[in-house]
Length: 489
Ligand code: BES
Ligand code: ZN
Ligand code: ZN
View 1: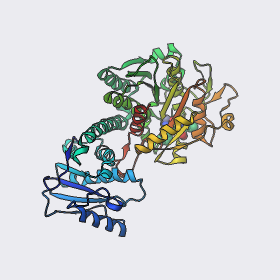
View 2: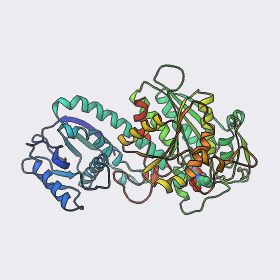
View 3: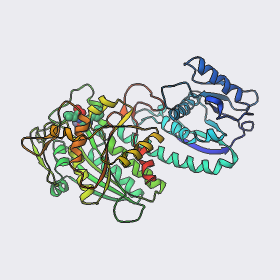
View 4: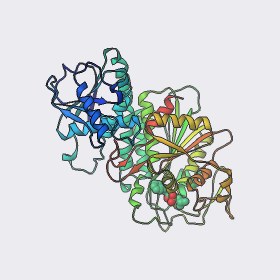
């Protein structure tokens, strides 16, 4: 759906047509004392206090020329953070308008307190309006919607800037969801590279592509081994946005780009295998963080590296028991071809440090089922060798509605990775699987390099019904948080 955002100066008595939305927060601080909508807001709040089923209160208001006016109570879904309640309420208001074929939604954000909700409203609207429509017929595609944000006169200029910025980031979030949702056969490693290259060209980023032969020549044994069983060859590529000073990156982002993860020779069971089309969600996030960073014109040097392969069994596929000798001297015995993410990320980490001299690195990956079991679908696992970096990421995530939970990188568990044949093996055993994956990656981080590993296996996508302001499928998680983080560097 095409959304047209527009900031206007609030005067509800002059507005007309479409839906007017007011938020009824505790204490009604988001609505002016003298506003004609205040009685409705009071009612919405009272109803929500009595019963948990009230989503909104609406009426045709006799003094107003909007078709509908709704008051959204913000205490309804008490199982959400205050910010997420705003995002969800905004998304629900959009649903309300869409179901009634209204072409315009106006949000009344006149008070100081309401203005604080502005960025959350834009997120709820823009992210909430997303649907993956590539394979739906045209009648399913939604039309345009005007989204008006009504603010106090002296706040209009600030609000305009904020809205434009949020809109840009949300567009990047939704673009990442589009490629993450795409079926495995439609998006090969080379397809991911072509998609990224188009963005790189558009924003004048440097783009370096290593094709399969280059991977062999360059000694990138992990990406090559994981991809060698597929007819769709593996690649590794770098996007480099130079908005800052200096010749080295301020930050390097490494995204897992497994276009499809069958498990390889250690084939996965059939029941949920189809979900592994989202095993490139780390890459999808990282590529579109680059889009947001460039579109916002941030004055930073940002490097993105995507090691990408299709993990698929074949006569030529790599085997359990194979040993890979990485460029940094680490040898790895493959104990499961299904623990392929860490094998490709290792090459990405090496390339970021060796070629691009990165000293601050974040990797983003749908890495372990163990992380999903430990933290569920709403927390990204955060493993980090630098407490200050961990705190910054956690704060940015909290601000943008993407939650982290720390997981340890315990020296005590290092021995779980030991191999009798090589330096390490690529799995640690049944216990603490998210942490042993993190410890594996840490082996590829050099002295003095600040690094965080973000395991998004649980948060990158989900199935079932709408959750809060997100439709099922890819969530685009980490685009908002990492853009926020880079802006604050
Ligand atoms: N892509 C999977 C991890 C995954 C699981 C992502 C569930 C999203 C949802 C990864 O490549 C994998 O298969 N990991 C194995 C590792 C094991 C063999 C040590 C896992 O978690 O089972
Ligand atoms: Zn796997
Ligand atoms: Zn995987």
